[in-house]
Image (cartoon, rainbow, N blue to C red; front, side):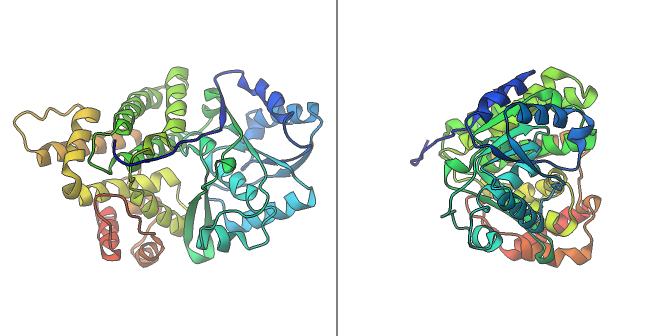
Length: 391
């Protein structure tokens, strides 16, 4: 491994069945005024809401509910939550839901006591909070984002056609604890499960496809990718297979809790492309990533051919004997494409609602990141998007 790095992750995880009982233990460590943050109401249908409310009441907490957090949480929803939190003097936030709910809770955490406009401070200027922040706890109901064990928060500004993520530098923004019961994920539709699975896989790819040194993080990434591929095939045949769903949930957490990024430069361009697509189309996040991934990786493959060939051999079991690195690398991406189609992922932008008229806005809204094998120009972004339209 090359370079220097630090690693700290203070989030305490409770994993498995019946782990919700630990919520009362954790709640005792925090204040009495709790903001309960959740989405569109599925937790009321599956009983999780009632269980959580019962524990909150038994713990003597005053509960202010912030419901209706959408899959791509908006800045306007954040403003609404800030008002509710301030009115109720909230001193702890409990997020019950998937990655969007957890992202929203972290954005709320840094905004309640912020005197500046949170969009301008955190998502335009990318500053760190100078104010008091409010601790967050998580009960996870959908896997994919890894938001339960990191300090990232993605917020959308619809009128500006921008969807921006801020990964906060201070580990105190990470959830203090996260409760992960794989059974909670089993009520999701297959489409949402597939999108979450691809989000996991792509998180690993974003960190894997960078650097050229012999890096321990890459070996961990390859193992995680193989686990996701194997378990996804089982889960797509039987959505109630607990072992497969538990492995997917655990892989999601480790895919983006910063472990496999250590010693890496990382390449987050697929996410920058996908987020810009999402800002213009409001499409499901994992599906926007799927639609742009292969065109992007085929575009940059010549600049990182050794890693793409390694990916083919170590992740997809492609036999390299008697073949060039380019041939091996191309077959690896073809194997990836076959698997993506098995999952029923969106394979082109039109499948997520993108029209030709949106391309200019998507190009303009795509942040250019460094760290990958090639730093894109805006013209390169357009070429990748046009390939993603035509496949």
